[in-house]
Length: 222
Image (cartoon, rainbow, N blue to C red; front, side, top):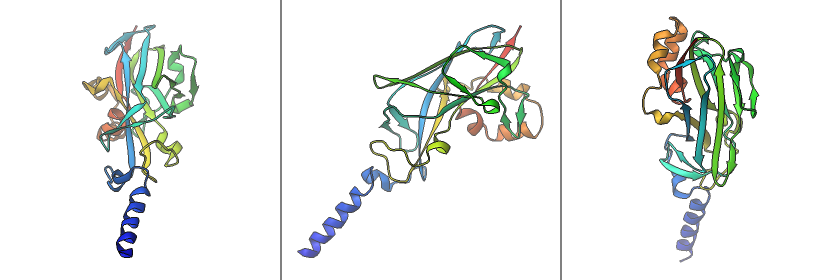
């Protein structure tokens, strides 16, 4: 009888040792949560004129979808460490676009200039809802790319917590532009990007450098 009690106690302690219970025994993507965050570019067109106002908006509830487990988790007043860069297509180095802050003007106040790495922004969290909106206009004609990313993986590692989180599992996030309903003008990028190693690297890693970072391409004319 004592042996049975010992075995039952061991099973119970094992099941309670992880924050997420039985789910923590499943690897899913291996070691991380990947939360999907929506972003929308308005108006959704491929051509703007100099001086046109372009709006980027992100709004979602604090029950956030995790791609790896196909579940939602309650993330209250969470810092996703969001950032953004706006670049001319020709300004690419080693497959990565570098931001040029002189090419556009932001009319939103709450942001931090990160130089070649674009700028960081914060969400307003209120009534269980995350909201962010930024307006900008481009100063020079050309073909541009917008990329929105989260530095959650590099900034927070595994020291963040939320209900149901498995101990030691790393947290990451990606951005989905316009619900990924189409290619967000990716063909424009392929058409106008200068030929070379940078283009080859970028196209090989489309998901990493475009699809999962809210990529959107547009043309600005006079």
